[in-house]
Length: 140
Image 1 (cartoon, rainbow, N blue to C red):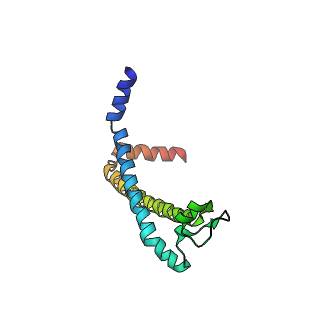
Image 2: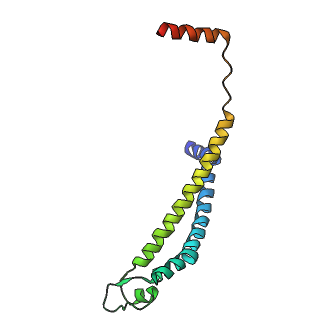
Image 3: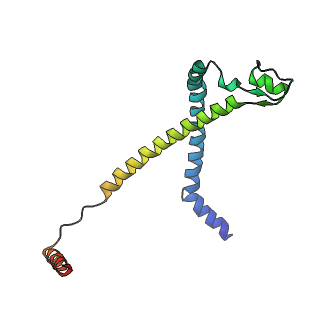
């Protein structure tokens, strides 16, 4: 029964709740980034390369012709879908960049808060000044 009590304390502290909220927000954010990549960026990239990256593949079977859409080609046989992989790599890169920038901003805010919290050192007393001078003279 003690293990349940420990787990309850762990869950109530907020660690599990914070993690759950982070996962939910991360999943929603991933969908947004995925939409940005698929709906906004890849069409522009496709214009430059005259291709829809999602439909770029190499047929691995003689029953598959290269002029079909990827979904239709997969129904006919195996394909090497490198265009989909390129899209996912771009998607990951953009998501990683956005998370990096977000963490950079959060760290900057934390540093500013920490600088505010550190109180200035009180001025040295006359005794401390004299002791410092004595110490420096003894070193020489």
